Length: 291
Image (cartoon, rainbow, N blue to C red; front, side, top):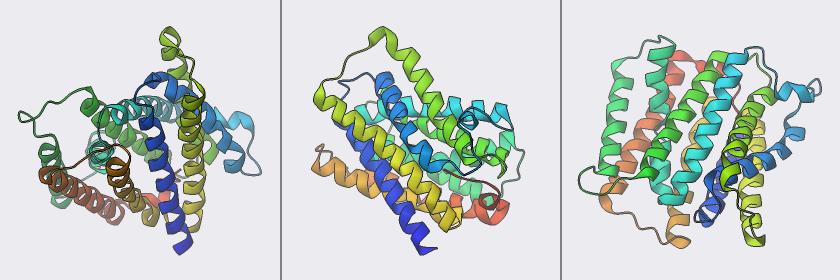
């Protein structure tokens, strides 16, 4: 189990470094184009994800096609919003919004899955949103497209997670991964055509780091969940905040004030509590494959 947890930390470190690569572009490549190229490079992970009985067409096939399309759409929206947010905001601030995902999962579980949610999880939801208000401080600072994109990214991630929960453990990993790659690839490719910019050599290097590290992260996460229960691996995603604060300070000159740090702590605490509580109440991590 320890190896699985360590691979989880390595996976989310790779995701954080991937995000740092795309942030380093500073918007010099349009977000749609970055997402499309990154998704195309993400296809490099497929040979490592395929099981012996998998076929290439399984990337596009699923036992429940509607959920495949839901994952693809959520992946497209989430990736585009993520690149937009990281381009415009400090990394730690973006992650604080994205880490609302478990809270959005709780809300969507009530709306879509008709699950019962007790007072503890509703309290965590309120604490999480209080943390958002502390971070954003509406009326005291200017809010813009980056903040909206970060919150939409968290909602898209929650929709993708709910689709995984509904799919259960019957879908193949390659299908679940394929939906998360094909959606951004197609959506980014279509949207980038009117404003395509040919990247220079340094931009290609940054885009390669963004796409290939995300692919590596997906492979590491798959092996992590094979070696340890997903409920042990999932909380390791919060280690991304440490990477974000470090990268923000050393690479991008970001400085977090005390109110923002307090808000981030509230959001992280609420999110971690929700992850643990979801497992205790619904036991859903044992019924699904995560990647």
